[in-house]
Length: 79
Image 1: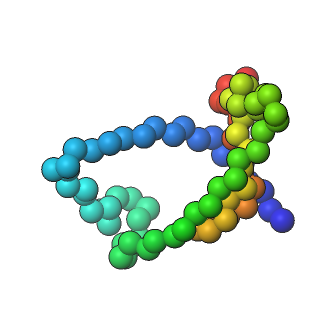
Image 2: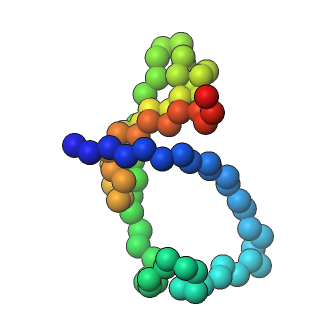
């Protein structure tokens, strides 16, 4: 089993219906592009009966499907 550590900021965006997504093959670090691939992701979230983890901004989930299947722990940013 391996683990990795990284900081993450998640921001949702909702482009309008006329939005055209740019090609990403001109972005540094992108080596190529292909056709979209569809994955079925299933996530099960874990917490206490009193939602103690959620109240402290902590998320624990087990995801299956896709490239990052496994256990995920998200902690609040900061000290």
